[in-house]
Image 1 (spheres, rainbow, N blue to C red):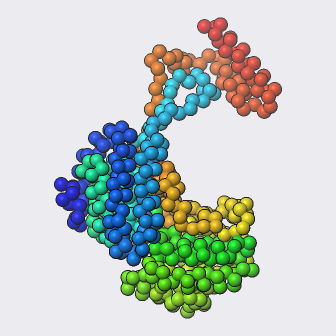
Image 2: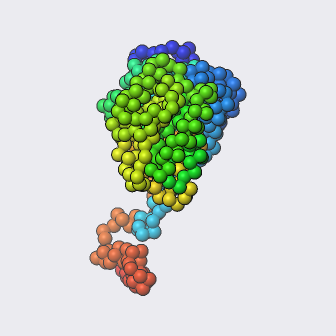
Image 3: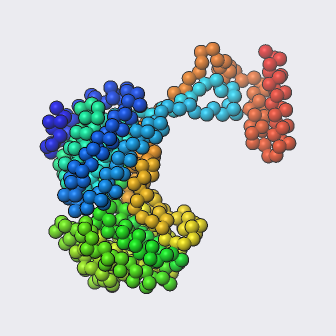
Length: 491
């Protein structure tokens, strides 16, 4: 039944029906051993690899990216993420004993186990700028954790979603457990209104917060990966040629549509002019490469208006005109190209007088998804990185770190909250459960009335661990042993 429904946009009632199907299938799936669920995820990776050429063809139609870029940025990282989930992720979700403190020796017989339970049915709403990489690892993590899934892809990613769903099922996933909900904004609302137990949203802030309000009204949690505004800090000691090449690549990859694309460069005043020359040359050299120019007329119109508004407010147009790769210098806060997220190949730049000014500029932004630092001094770069209030900082590089399957993606401020990908993202898919077990024959001293010497007993226990100096701790141990001996004789 689910396969028959997968290709058509659904109404609210149909979404509720799909959610009910996934919910009915979920307990049996969750009851399987983790190893069995992991095998399905790993088999999905193998089968998706076989579908690689078809995936590349489907991805290239809306993106205009060449096959090599799609394989390196979307297909291979997605396969890697699924393999990591099947192997390392399943190990991390295995129940594990918790350490018992010797300080509470009087209840030490009780053993504690940390386990992880699925939420039930989760909703995954994903964007069109990376329809495979931003979606399939999220879906796979939810499934590995034992959840059912309602996935609402971007309309431009519907064909990718249908293919992925088919592969998951051929790999052994129960048919009804994973439902694809196609359509636009109303379909996304229908996912929440269908009653998903947790929402995972990736996309723009306005849409994400609207869905989050619906989810919160139902008293249910969400993870939001919202708009980004990546700022690159070029320090005075940076290799300007490397920084220019890296930032130009990080801006123009995927037409600048990645949420972690470089948007603003803050360069130290002494190197600002030289950097502008180098970044202009780097962008000009890449401007005719395939897949760097926007193709949607609405997108082109918006980018051109942003460029014109910035120039009217004092920015210098160094390269381009907003319809393709564009460089704007001397931007200031208050310009839309500075304060808003730009989904497109516009790069802006401004000089700063000090590290403190650059750090303050980054930290006062409402969107704090990512930043990069460019410096020849690793210790200095790490020190500055620690001062930045952003989700991820890259030193002397951009973009590619998030493709590593163990690396989470997290937002700050209006860029969202919670994690996706990596162990942190996987743990968002589960609820912790602690099982504490006391053996039937174990002594339960805590049930008995405390003896008059009880205070001395616990005070001396604390002294053994916390008293200042070895001499004081040894004295505490002596008093503890004396108290215990006295209690034993009293029995």
